[in-house]
Amino acid sequence: MDQISNVQTAADYTDALTLGPSNYDAISVNVWNNSCISQTFELGPGGDYQTGQWGAESLEAANSTFQLGNCGGVRFKTNPDTPGSVARIVAYAWKSGDVQKLGGIQLSGTISGTGAVMPTLGIMTGIVDCVAGTVIAGTGFTVVKNAAGDFTINYNTSFAATPATNVTPQVTAQKVWPDIVTPTASAFRVFLYNAAGTLTDPDRFHFTCTPIS
Picture (cartoon, one colour):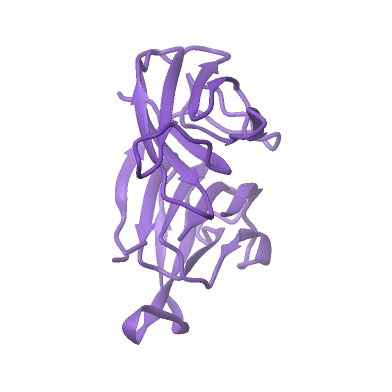
């Protein structure tokens, strides 16, 4: 999985603020603090990213989140209309289908350069090493490995209400399906099943918790 881990936008596009071009399944984007400009990479004939090109620029509002499907990448820069107001980008890209913006939830609060996102301020994201049962990326939460394919995420600070939670397993050798159970404002538990219906550990999983207004 490729990612942009809380990077501040600049006046022009940079490698640090670019995902792709590649044959991604989907891209999840969080825009924080200020608006910015994004540009998606449009696939060529037959979905070939190698013959694609960067498309039209789009203004992205802050604070917001959206997903892109069936595109070869995305990149970001500071909104030229407000050059003194930089945005911070948190984005994840992994490998499925039609360029389409999903969600667009408006959020409140700010995000700092440390990468800490408090639940009361907006989205929480994290990446968990399933074999070790440890945190790879993200702050504001802890992880407990109950058993193979069975994990509990506890938030350091509770949300105001139970957030909308999404879990995406990252695995190289097999398909894994998540089942989120007993979500609350302070934690959620997830079971990860393989095709045989057996609890299993993928390499890692990425989760996003979005407050519901």
